[in-house]
Structures are given as structure tokens and as C-alpha cells.
Length: 351
Image (tube, rainbow, N blue to C red; front, side, top):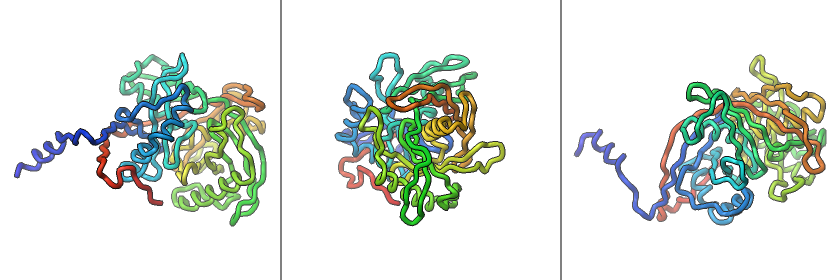
């Protein structure tokens, strides 16, 4: 037998059969929330808009989403991004967001990570002191601003799609919990915002299972009792998740967010689109002025900074353009293989 180093080198140099699908990815995280960026290996997602491409992947290649997000290649809380050519002139690229239930309409942590990856890998030329990217997502166009210094991205902020408070201080009866007061906010996706303490939830890792169960119950109750309506797109007219809010644990931080979305996923970050929606709610209530910053920590203690850049309108809604700031880190690269004879090739998920 070869010595162990030669043996491992032989494995490293192995190439899979031609009929196996090969998908290359880069993994990163923003405040602890993972992002798996597909680099190559997927078929072209057809459509003239990002929403059309989202629908195309859902109808024709949803098995590839599950292959990359589910076990054995991923896990129940994996998150992904498929980067595609732009649909609109003047934008840099478009992106689809993937998770355990389907396809998000907006994702702030992914915008931050994608900006970091594009610049620090050299895929997009870095400009100093700031590089600007315009990114198309299913809910619109997002502009990101990277603070660059000596070849590194030190901070990323993005101006989100128009965000608004759809309902304020509404009440819903949640079985097993009682009457819950919530705000409904849109930050690229709709979230129900509720006070954690009033629901018996502690926003700490030790209360993880309770967060999922109560968050899911609140989401279900709101969906059953209220109509969620986007002013322009039917595909955006759904409740994406529940966001628990409350006091920060870390001294000097303003508040804490814990988001439960998709099929019981708990966001490890403060949730970029959730912070954007929260800025719209605070502004509508008169708690926040234009330019005033608010720091919001996650279940892990990682922090996003939110603010309101300007007022706008969005259909019938008084809306704002929120800004969200954070940073991301690159974890590694991988190539995944899909053996057509593997009975579990499309992945599986256990909860």
C-alpha cells in the first residue's frame, strides 16, 4: 500500500464519472448566518425577470435546491444564493435565494455576504474608499456600499427596496399562547414582529426549540386570520416569518431580533430584511428619525445597524428606504457531486 500521504493525494486527484453532476460553491457567513453561493454546475434559469427565473427554478430544478440545502450536503438551516446575469440595465447581477422551504424574495445577510465575496475574491474590481453594487433580487433592486481598505472589505451597508409598515398593533389569538399583539412589516419580505417576553420566549440559544414552536404558531395564526398583500406582485404576497423583538443582552446595543422563517429556520444573524422592515415600523410609529441609527443584535450577539435613509411611497403605502449595515466572512469552497444512482441524491431533512 502507498504511504498515507500518497493515498490521500490519490483521492484528491480523483475525478468523478462523466454522468455525475458537479456543482461548485463558496461558503460564507454574515453574523453567523450561512450563505452557500453557487459558482458553477447549475442549468440556466430562464426568464426575463428575477421572479420569472425564481418560478422557473421552482418548477424545473427544485431538486437541485434540496440537493444543496438539505442533508447530506447541507443542513436544516442552510441558506443559498444562485447568482445570475442582470435583467435590468444598470444592475451588476441578479440573485435567487434558497432555503429549506423554497425561495426567499429578499435577503439582507446574503446581500452583505455577496458584496464581500465579489470584491475580496477579485470577481468585481474594488474601488476606494467605497465600491457600489446594484443587485437585482425578486422584490426589486438593492444597492450595496462596501467600505474598502487595502484589499479588504471592512463594512457593507445596503439600501433596501422600499419598506413599509403594513399593520401596526394588530391582535391575533394564537392557540396555546393567547392574544398576541403584532406589527406587520415589509422589508423585501413580510414579517410579523412580536414582543418576545409577551409570548414566553427567551431570545437565547438555550430556548431554540421554543423559539421555533412559538414562532411557527404565531406565523400560522397571522396567516389564517389576515390577508397578506403586496401592492404589485402576487408572488410576494405571503408571510415569510416571525420576528421576536426585545431588549439587547449586550451592553451598548439597542435591541435584539430573532427571526424564524421558512420551515422552522432560525436566523443566526439579526436578519437584514427583517431589520429593514423594523426600521419602517419604528419610523411609522415615530420612534425613529431619518438618519438615526439603531443597533440590533442576533441570537448569537452579532450586530446589524439599521437606519432610515429617506421617505418614499410604494403603491398605497407610505414607505421608507432603509439602510442596513454589517459584515461577512468567507468560510471555504467545495465541489459537490450528484451521483444519478444515489437514492438520496435530492437530499433529505430531519427536524
